[in-house]
Image (cartoon, rainbow, N blue to C red; front, side, top):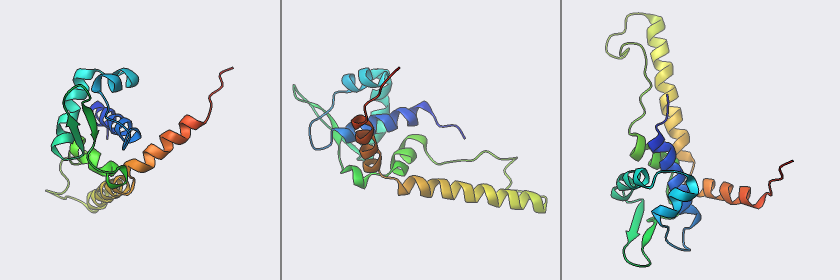
Length: 145
C-alpha cells in the first residue's frame, strides 16, 4: 500500500490547524509556505475536509481556517478515510470472488485481517496525540555539529 500525497499533505495540514486550535485561524498561504506545499494543492485538499465537517473557515481581513472539532475528537482514521477513501489491499485477482485453493483462502483472510487492524489502529490515534507530539518535539532543541 502506498499513501497518496493528498493524504500525507492533508495530515500535515490538519496538524498545523491542530497546533493553532483555540488560539487563532490559519491562513492557507502561511501553512503552504511553512510546510513547503503548493497552496493550490492545499486548497484542493481542504475541500473534502471542510465538507466532512472537520474544518471551518471565516472570511474577511481576519479570516482563515480552523478545526471544527477539538483535536481529541478527530482521529487519524477520520482524516485517512476522507482523503484516501477506503483502504484496499491489492491482492491476487480478487481472491474473494473465486477462491481456488486452501492457501489462497488463508492468504486472503490474512489480508482482510491486516486491513481491519490497520484501520482500527488509525481510529485509535487522535489528532490531539499527534499535536502533543509536535509540541514535545518543538521543546527539544536541535544541535547540529
